[in-house]
Length: 96
Image (cartoon, rainbow, N blue to C red; front, top):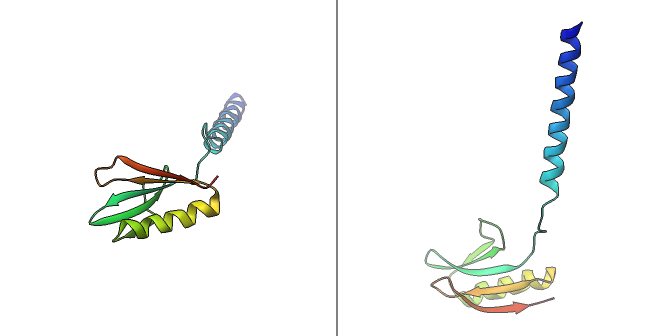
């Protein structure tokens, strides 16, 4: 009988741990933004959402990448951050 109650308590503990894990993963300390970065990428330029590792789109010319980033930022009322070829920030356009 004692073994049965011990297994129930382990199940309760496991359920509580899973619930805490999922609650903490849903509530981040900082909400995600829709800011778009125009960054150098391979032999051209790319648009990347802030916080993402993957790119949204890639382009041969920086001007094309800027136009794509502006379209996305306008839709989500965000900023466009334009980088130079060396990675430093060149300009910021706000669509708040």
